[in-house]
Image 1 (tube, helix red, strand yellow):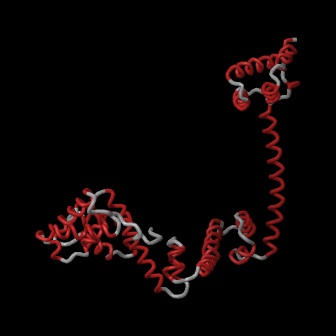
Image 2 (cartoon, rainbow, N blue to C red):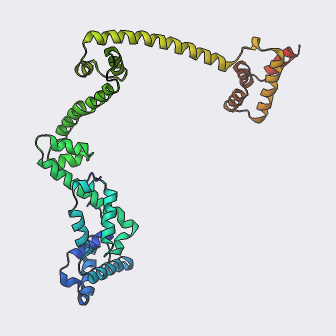
Image 3 (tube, rainbow, N blue to C red):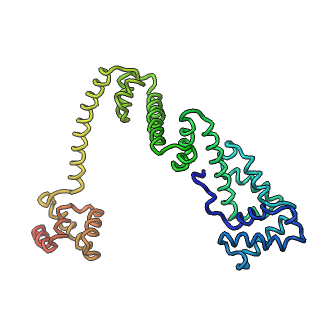
Length: 322
């Protein structure tokens, strides 16, 4: 949705249509079209659009006025009416709403169906939603209007400007909403997932999900002793998990490194050295060598020698050959 004023920069076709909207009904009569074309072009020139001196832009003005003359009223009259009739519910799905507006208006104004114009109509719908939200927010009591716009993810600068509040006030409401809504909703959801479970299990679930003890006391309706007991149990479990994790990491590291040089059988040593030499023929880059050796399940002890002192492989080969 729109979060700022979208009228700051408008496409040429909309500027043309808005200027045509400013003409009286006589300006759309066939005999007055040339004068109207000049007037619209001059008005746009004054805004820096340089229409009079640009053949393509001048043609856009002519085509738009010809269409308005045939229909009998400006395109913007229908487009503005369609946007003005929108409700907050209509604008909840701006893309769908835009498609409907374009579909209806295109029956009379086929040009609005052009793909590049759809994005501009979407912006009009989004701006309409922003205006409707701000209007509703101004009618709400207390901080409810601020909360509404925050919920709708309206830009902070728009909120402070539209509701005439300070940035500090906005931050204050944001903080309140975080405390009252975000955490309460989160904890309620966590409690729902363990509804009917013993207190110890409910407390453990909340602690595991980083819920404060204060919030647990308030929402889980347990006492401090229950929390302390669960925390002690969790600390013991964590220590055991850490011990097991360290053992597993050490096991994996040892498995990945493979046997030491002294543990490698002679025939296996010869196979490994032959594989390493084939790899060295492909690359002399240490990272690449290590990757290829790992893929070939060559022990790390041999890989370290291959990248640091390849000549030592000859000695190991001779030793393995007896």
